[in-house]
Length: 206
Image 1 (cartoon, helix red, strand yellow):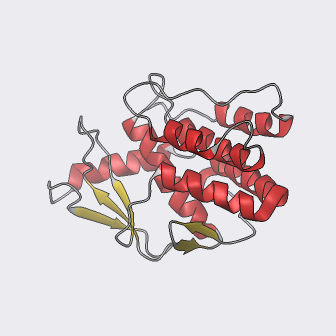
Image 2 (cartoon, one colour):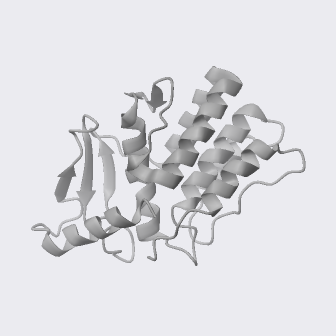
């Protein structure tokens, strides 16, 4: 699985961290995305080994932030943008950081502009946290954000079937097993193909 190696990497950082205070240690990704850092140990209840918080300068992006950003990206660029986003998500799910599909236009995330590979790097590390903190089979692990991101694309094209606020609520929900992927008889096979790619991701074993 494209996320397994860096789960092990983050767990290894815990073994050597000099500061035990929450977010007291920094692993910099600024050579890939200006201002991007992993701060650890994390603050999740249960003290999951490897947990961290992703920061872009002083902003900590969340999955709901990304869901709204994907929805806006696809709304502004129409069906071509939606298709580009689906291809990007499929490649990210399949290949992680080694993938080659990038978005054709800059990705705006809560006022931050990401270009080219920067979007891949930020989303990869944001998604990775899920397999550390909410692993399958009890939870969905990294599949959860991928499913919600795909639902954000659906909401931009078919708001009559799925509205963005519903997607945001499903994304932010914690405390139990996440809602399954959106299903509707009118949903095109194009979206089903992306859902199938996500479902068939190789498991990390975490």
